[in-house]
Length: 405
Image (cartoon, rainbow, N blue to C red; front, side, top):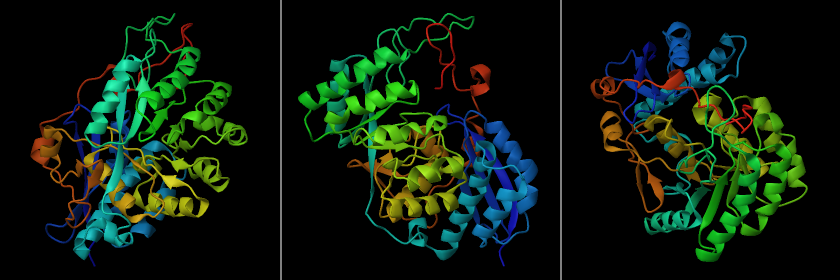
């Protein structure tokens, strides 16, 4: 029997984004696995949860009993289903899947049922401070081979999510943070999408991210207003706390909906899928507990006609992106994957990063998930200093009221 000998937490920021990687070392000399536990706004809390609680809980256990260990760890804290503990569990869980695939001598996707496709289509992010700038960026990315693009545009005077920031009006509050107002944004989005359909045409698959920033009733209006422009999906139209509004949208329009980036609890996403209130599930795999949980979720979604579109931002480590990719390769209800482009310094820290070309992410077919870590290089990329220790920046309305990000 091969057992868990030790668990180490590696904190690194090769692109100035704070990443948390877990290394599970086994009793078999030279055999280890890596998992992603990145919660970039609270990385030290995750590291403490792993080092002080999961590490002693897991040492000595059989590396092959992934499901049993996940279930035991899940209830070990009694209170559960939060992002800190889920990310801590994800780091260990993904590392154990890496180990299992390495022991089998095959890429991880083979253990998940084998390929359903040769590579994973991805979407990139297009933005601009005007319609002409956005159109130019869309054309540039389409020439690079991307035909699924998340399109976002700056709104004058507002700190617009997904667009390059303009000179924003300051909110009426002591912090003088940049301001967001929903109404100018809601008016601008249909005009933006109409412009792109007229000038780019129907070959472009457009995605747009609301990022939960608008009042729910304006979200209902927006979903109806953008229906004529045939989006691939409209993302995060509501906050998780406002899930019930999806029923209202479903009864009034056929705009495809993606949701889940902020979900951490089964109670949040199971009803949404069971009732077919969304079309794409957007969970961040480490935030729901890792690969063991994500593969079950993907299978459930298949039965309900919901496709996958796993969250893949810069604050997911290359290990996490590789796990996304292997699951994407193996599920029949794959929809699209958010693009991960790795800069040279990141590739030096994480050899084996997936390659991106022809609008797709491609596996390297090494045993496991295919990504390793150079710990010496990782140590030379310490966490940067951030205001409020890396907390998500405040977003406020003009009158100073805090809103969801």
